[in-house]
Length: 148
Image (cartoon, rainbow, N blue to C red; front, top):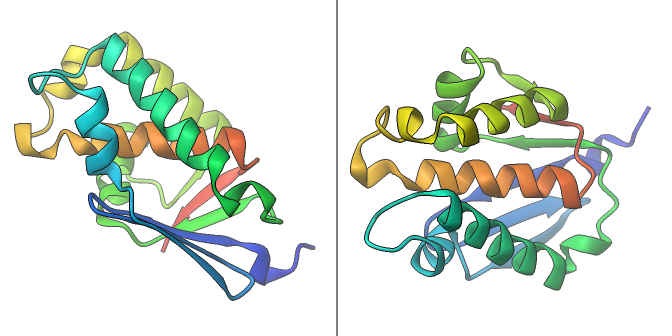
């Protein structure tokens, strides 16, 4: 059984990101808005925009103290955007495994225009959030995300 404190608590906002583990808090000034501003041209999310998002998100994850955290494989969040994502892609589940997330992400990429039309234009950052969560799962070896 993993030490319960080694669960990563995260919150991804437009203007900043925060990560808590083992009573250690990492606060980053660059939020989803920063990623969007460098990835999305003219308000259009396409394959190129997503590739750019992945690049900038990897830069954020790899360059910060996040890499050295001892994460138990579980991450939790109470972000409303994660709940929206779950409703859109995962039948409103409260626990999403890495495999489920990857399937949902692949579906998103294959049916990009369909999903983009499911959200309001000012809510497009939900997809930046999705890309960020996916990259976190890959780079930080997270096996499951729980919505609390």
